[in-house]
Length: 511
Image 1: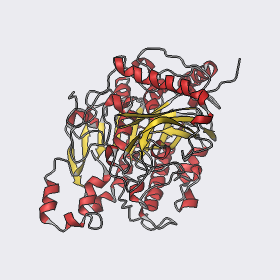
Image 2 (image 1 turned 90 degrees about the vertical axis):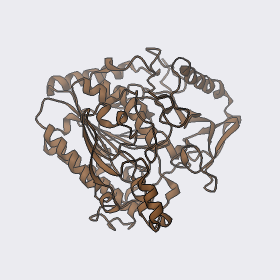
Image 3 (image 1 turned 90 degrees about the horizontal axis):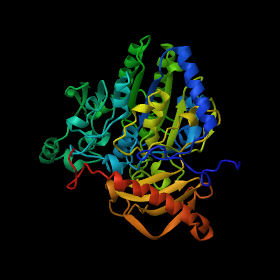
């Protein structure tokens, strides 16, 4: 039998509504045995901690080549990488709300309908979707959301109404609470009473909130700039309290902890202000996030839950380079808001002591889409996968649990708002359209720099030789054309039976 190759090997589609994936039978059996042995030994299904940061770049952590070298040491993230699996091809969506909705639903933005971030109380959210929180809650998990939400302020889209038992955080995005208060950013609003009142009358909640399952969100405190600098500390304490309360109980749990940092503008906690070698607020914020990660891991260890908990750490998209230097680091082309690698290739760390081999590094593809089916697989609840909608994620349980496991994903499909942009398979990426990365261009799809460019002929990039995506390899590699085009056609054909959804703007379908 020829060796496995992600381009030359065939996938299996087990149901019409499920994304086809590779089936590595030996890996599947290894994962099955490990989960069964663990359950017999620990008598409890695993806990899950998803730690999602905002606009942190692929290269910021020391384990990805950043850390001390870029003025912000990250010892806790680096330790987590040494004790688990470090992904080098972990993919988000181009912006935060699409990424968060994809992570929660296992579906690309053109299916869940959040194509871009809703701003200033704009309608649109998760209504009508089924989340991993709801599925795990139905399976007996305690579910807790902490921090940034930003997948709909409307009541039916809020965390407490889509599967979470409890929510403590804010509904929108960091800059929306502060930019109009900061004279450096918006002097024409700060120094105008009329414009300040105009902002205050916009239909968005200016507070961070608390809510319990099925209830209404209650305001906790208005998010002024001084309050914003305290939010990651407050949210860390809340998550620490949740972990402590769950210790010794019979219920497994899901903690979805989403940080405020490091979205611009950064106002780090005073204990971190000026403490990074770079002496810059963004880098100081990275130190704070690293310390919070360390505190949550230590709380798990102290309460005897570390071996029972799968930890996933990532960022919701690439760096927001329009706010440089209040932005992150990526070695790839372009940044947030684009489908070039710099917009969607994000850090991805997974740790589960005794279950995920320590010190692994893999370039196997792993999508935010994969979180939902993978967490269900790890919890032993794959039968709960929805059957009435298309699921773009593939179950990566065997990839994570088998030593030197191979990814079960063949393709990554890149969506830029409502435009199908590109597809990756193996080391190659075929691009049909993308944003220009000229900072002088007008705001493009989703409100970010760069106009949409549709190429007359597809471009092919070798991401191993050319991570900056500058050298079109198409004329030298024509053998790949038919295979890539067929993969694209197969993906787009799924929308005939499972049509796209829009929940924002004038064309939105109201659920």
